[in-house]
Image (cartoon, rainbow, N blue to C red; front, top):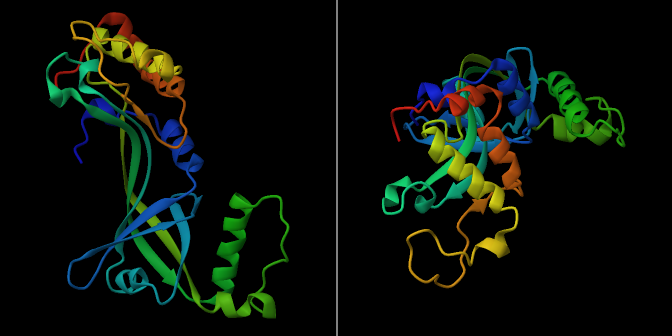
Length: 242
């Protein structure tokens, strides 16, 4: 993935809010033969580290024992838009909008049941703050067996890279047009039958934007004209690359 400056210039506080809003993240490790392995896990952040847990027998634990350098990634797919929102003929204008943060890390693995239990407490505090469970203890028969099978993984972050692809590369007028289409998409059944400018008779109705995770199109439209971008839109500034 390429990281153009106009996609990566995101304030640290905004990146932190985004990462902390995500439920799961991807851990990418490398096997002995060079094959990448990927796992999807709940996580909790503490300072400059990311905590998660795996089963001790997981192939990714073997990877981290031998090669502790790894990547942890969170992302949010927002939409896929059709090319004719940008250009009436050029199909290469079709694109996808997303927010992605990648952490390059060095992992430390511990199999100590007490360390695993302490990490589980932090994870439960994030995902189940209301309680509703018996206090965790490696001495409790209810938990002993499971805790002895788990490994606590702490990822010390060495580098953080971000890509918030939200149309920042488009000229102001193109972005206004995309924003207008996104706002129209709030009522998709009304406008999917609408002929495009310069097009022939409309064909059968079809989706022209696909939204992920139930994200409302108004969110992306508002984000595209968020505080970091309003100056560009107001001044008609455009980025140089498609």
